[in-house]
Image (tube, rainbow, N blue to C red; front, side, top):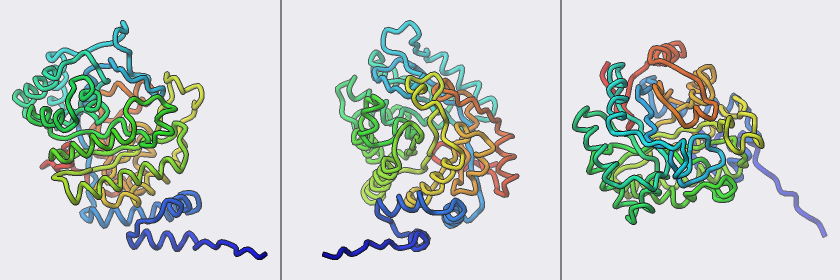
Length: 368
């Protein structure tokens, strides 16, 4: 009995198909990320960035990540921020404390608020809606708040479906939603990391947000024990949801942000003590840009990889360098201690050959 050897097309053929905007199969993407030269990935991602953004602009945002509460009924073992309900170290910021933080942010040129917290079962819906309403009335700023995981938690706490929660928040002033809590949207790894909200639930919340007419970002956290297959599955789930949203919903994903796991002070930090190498991050930044060619913007996570590699990412497909992060209390507790001012981000963009433009969280560009 003779067997026929299975032959595979050279990876150069796969790269050519990507350049033609073909959407590859899972195993083909896997070959690309494992076999393609870094320079080939970088070149193709940079070409797609120029195709999507021919004006040579790289955007950035000045905002403040206000973590309104660290009380959380989820016990994700990659998180150093949360405290269980009843813990003496648990906190909830008062509305007045939040207003003070917003005023400090506005004074230095901030264009909006990024507000996220834990899944706090003790806060009523009115706490959130009154806060949003007052922030909008007092300051008229863009409110980019509450990850899908938080909205999932609100749904459980308030006994409302996702759409009902989103409509209440939108009516109170919510403008757009960050893509936190995505990590890797594959339950095989989410269960190991004790993530409360499963992958489909996260996607369902996102779909409800899009149906309500709110733009969102999407994220991927890599380097916390997942496999290459898990990462590709994650990208495919986002790609398919974006395709559906583009066809049937008033809104969709406006940007994708891959970032790296920060191990310090986390329960799994002893098992996974090392951060992802910069080269691996940049390869996945490029692959993500190519894979998610239906999402218009991509942000490099200088906060987790540092400004030196963040600026390199502007040549690996990213057209956005993210936020100055005036305040951030979640991943900073896990060791992401990089800092930047608006001037620093502005200068990095110029030094890398691009034109800097400040934006809001929904990627609306602001006049200079």
